[in-house]
Image (cartoon, rainbow, N blue to C red):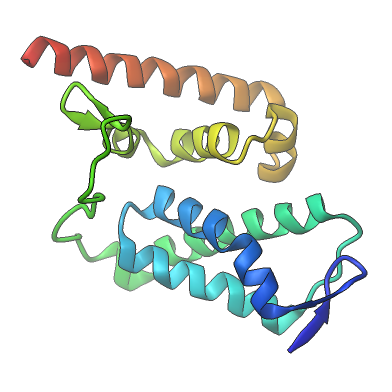
Length: 168
């Protein structure tokens, strides 16, 4: 299947290859569960196939995928079945590299402790390399709000690390 995404003919496979990592990481950052992240991942690309949106620039295309991933998470989280269930476990990566380990925890485990609103700001800023202006536009929030969320997230991360240091 071929669609015209940014003016060029691009196959769905190319779009999936281009954005799959970003969409999955964002979905996983929100859900902290592989199965739920898989569901959101699938829904994002199904929406892309159904709508086949046209984009003026590549940055608009990337923003569309981020926004749809966030919207899919929000819809998924509001689902009445989800609100009445509790996950059996937190699905963290099994293989911890030395770079990821900080005082016995991985960076991902520290990030998992953050409230979702802070996790999304951290993810977009550090992992997607977006500026606070881009994040504020994407999330439809004030830039000062995004900066405050990043500041609070960093402060919480420091507190989590200090708590762990006191227990070691």
